[in-house]
Amino acid sequence: MNLCMIGTGYVGLVSGVCFSDLGNNVICVDKDLEKIKKLKKGKIPIYEPGLEELVLKNHKNKRLNFSTDLHNSIKKSDIIFICVGTPTKRGGSSADLSQIYNVAQQISKSINKYKIVVTKSTVPVTTGDAIEKILTKNNLKKKFTVVSNPEFLREGEAIRDFTYPDRIVIGSNDKKSNKILKNLYSPLISKGAQYVHTSRRAAELIKYASNAFLATKITFINEIANLCEKIGVNVEDISIGMGLDKRIGGRFLRAGPAYGGSCFPKDTKAIINTADKYKTKLTVIKSVVKSNKNRSNILLKRVYKILNNKVKNKKICFLGVTFKANTDDMRDSSSLTMIPILSKKGAKIRYYDPTGYKKEFKGLKNVFYENTVKDAIERSDLVIIHTEWNDFKSINFKNFIKGKKFIIYDMRNIYDPSKIKKQGFKYFSVGR
Ligand code: UDX
Image (cartoon, rainbow, N blue to C red):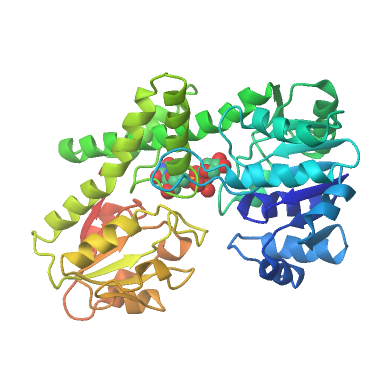
């Protein structure tokens, strides 16, 4: 099939590349000329394992193309995927849909034959209705269908998640588009992915409800971890014991720092905003947002306690600063809350991240990037493992002692406490 992905951000680029790998002709369009030029040369704007190889392969065999010409790309395509950003509005909590509506206006002027217009971006319920209205203005004969097809890709695992999804959700109010989309996804369905066909509004809500639920699971276990610390119980035993109940499931029950990233913080706020509009109370999700906001304070308090409330001039090392491993994404990472506060309190911070220096900490007093784990750790008073990169999973800490032994605060519970303690380190982790 001929597909057009509008927006070469995370969602558009990964989905476009994977669709081309399934044998479709895909044009990825973006208004950013520099980005398109780089993509044509095989240079990938985001860090995603395996993506570069797939771009090069499919660009070479001409199934994958990049363009800034939206009008012609739409004309050539049967299915148009809207994959532009829907960030939180500045100073508010609702999703900013200006890019979505802008793109819809442009599509409305370029429809030359029957098109399926699919929103892959995460959009609040009824956005599909609004897009349909915009398209109808210039296309009274309605040679199009607007469909919702939310993506559930995780950064760092996106290609795997696209190729082996738990489910594919298609929200459309007609049979024709459903049949075409089912056909598009048939290679994944035949490998075992569940295909769910719903109304358009339901598909839009499934995405928000899923992310809000996952955020709730994480927040739930984080709060249980707080209790475990007080009563001397290992939170991992609780996660295993709970997770084996099939109604609960073991995934997303890892206690740690506040959840972050491009989706959970934004989508939880947006679903609350939608519910407020419809005068419905989402008290559970509201508590989750509040609890997650407070999570960094709880972890910071532990840091102060570990340092006997003497933070000034303490040398603190952060291993990993991204919101999770296998991504260079800093959006809503809890390190963005913790590092500035510690810097303000006079701590001397050195950090290392496999994805390099982060401009987000530029200008902060006494916050420096180090090029290696060794440089970041050596001569520290406290080593904080903030992100669960594989690079940090088998460090021989003994090799990095210069002078006095440092304390370790493992915020991701990577290490076995008894083994580390046997080596003579003071070791703290989360909920155990
Ligand atoms: C998420 C959803 O998983 C994905 O379906 C959606 O399309 C986009 O949002 P992503 O933001 O890439 O994906 O990351 P995810 O792996 O879900 O982790 C989000 C946050 O939760 C991270 O900060 C992570 O560290 C945290 N997390 C996750 C935990 O603290 N504990 C867990 O058990 C799982």
